Amino acid sequence: MVLFLNNTGTQVTEFLMICFPGMQDTQHWLSVVLAPLLVLAIGANSVLLLTIQQETSLHEPMYYLLAILSMLDIILCLTVIPKVLLIFWFNMKTISFAGCFLQMFVMNTFLPMESSTFLVMAYDRYVAICHPLRYPSIITEKFVIYAAIFIVFRNLLATLPTPVLAARLNYCASNVVENCICANISVAKLSCGDIHLNKLYQFVSVWCLLGSDLMLILLSYCFILRAVMRLQSGGTATKALSTCGSHLILILFFYTLLLVFIFTNKARKKVPSEVPILLNVLHHLIPPALNPIVYGVRTQEIKQGIIKILKYQF
Image 1 (cartoon, rainbow, N blue to C red):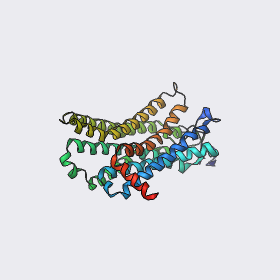
Image 2 (cartoon, one colour; image 1 turned 180 degrees about the vertical axis):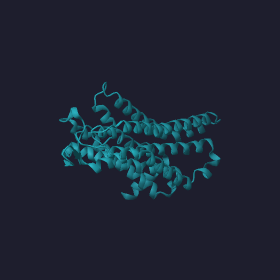
Image 3 (spheres, rainbow, N blue to C red; image 1 turned 90 degrees about the vertical axis):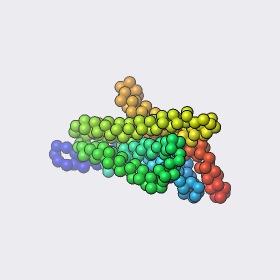
Image 4 (cartoon, rainbow, N blue to C red; image 1 turned 135 degrees about the vertical axis):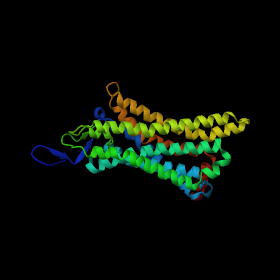
């Protein structure tokens, strides 16, 4: 649908999402994988949030940070995946102009928020292992509040220009988005104007936010590893590494999948266009599905809390 502005041009008022251009007849089969993963992600994160809320033994800063991560995961899943499934199942490909840029805003803001949460959690583990005697005085509930404020405002201010710049462009030609989601460049390239500023700002903001987070996380774990190697007791060292194992696994998976998506997106001429689109969708689904499972399995306190709640319910 378009709204006529004058005799020389029209303005797009909605977009048509075609997901995978070369798989229109078979793309709906992807829902066989996406739908169960969505149920798993929402269900597992909801159980984790409920467990942290109900169990007083989990009312500690480390678990509050995990609750923040779960809330971000749920928001990212519900922003992207239900629309993708509607396209696959009911051919509901249209999305309003405002809805598209709202989705773009949430994706561009909450994904770096998740990265920042991993950074704060890495700092939490660094203090716990490298400065255990000072941990109770540094990692407090007030620290979690300040960390939450930092996570929200740092990423909100840095990423808000991305959807704003894209929304200000003049969309006077095609409204067909060759993607499952309203990714910045996929939408901006449909405009009749110059999008070099959009590309530049997204590139700089992504690498400044996620790149700085990743470097600081790796630095934290270098200090942690050095501190663990100095421990005299082998059992203590093993326990210390185990407490960080689940966190490190999820961080590596989160950034590896993101980096693969970025590089395949840049190499579109050598990689089928469907590959970066699929990776983008999966990056909004697989980490949210894995996060609560890995923490639930590897963290004894959470596992016991979940078992207690399940016994109480059934």
